[in-house]
Image 1 (cartoon, rainbow, N blue to C red):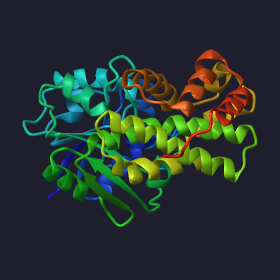
Image 2: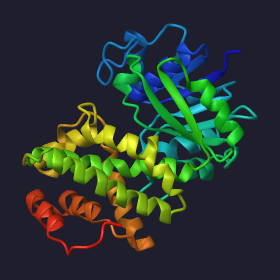
Image 3: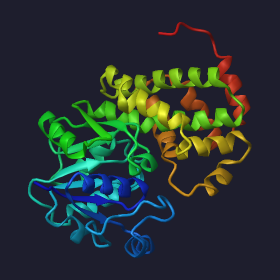
Image 4: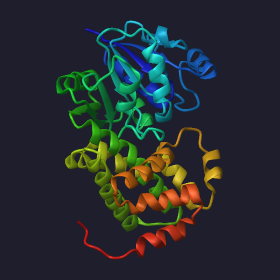
Length: 335
């Protein structure tokens, strides 16, 4: 039986997920809050700026009114930037949701004000949301490739394993394979903090780093984000999976990665403001860096790469000096 699903957010990821779920035989609605973007989606049946050439089928209904978009929907997917999840969740709380709705977070980030993960933000702001009906989808899933049907695998974190298994089936098809995991903390922290390392990867590319440099960065980057995630309650093995290593490597090397691209601009000499001015989409790693910097102090975790990225972004530290400081720290055992 087709499932009635709402996808909130008409950006590249929202459109890609809406098309995917539609292809899987479900009844889909898209909500886009920005009036100009909404008109563009309705008129052109595509996001001509963020995902040009990917047509939204006519059977997908597009709304500017949130209440209309979620009416009668049993699954609500939040494909909005992480810094807007709280505001959108508050609107959902007043929207008259179906009785047994499932919420699927598609954002990768940490709320910088509360330092909450996205599932916590949703649960805190929607009375119907709790540990049993909130899930997060993460993993190597650039919208551009998903929209074109290129094969990938993702993981859906949900403490309710039965619901996680149900969502697995909703999202999966011949090119998009979903796994499930009860470790939603690991799924969310891996997805959020890998963006910091992706910025570092871009900076390294801008500075002319080679393959050895990237291999070392990915490995040590994974070590420190997993260290923080475990301190927050995640399982170590999750960081060896799709939302950890899989998403980290993909985001660090991909030409589609806005975080890597942003970092490369800084590595080539642009200021923080200059690099941000050239970006057309949200760079989630900037806010993730600020959040991780606060969390590492709270949990007393050592995160040397994150510290240097923080200094580059927010204190105008020269990237070459930051790299030198990383390489000349006191020597220690690897584990």
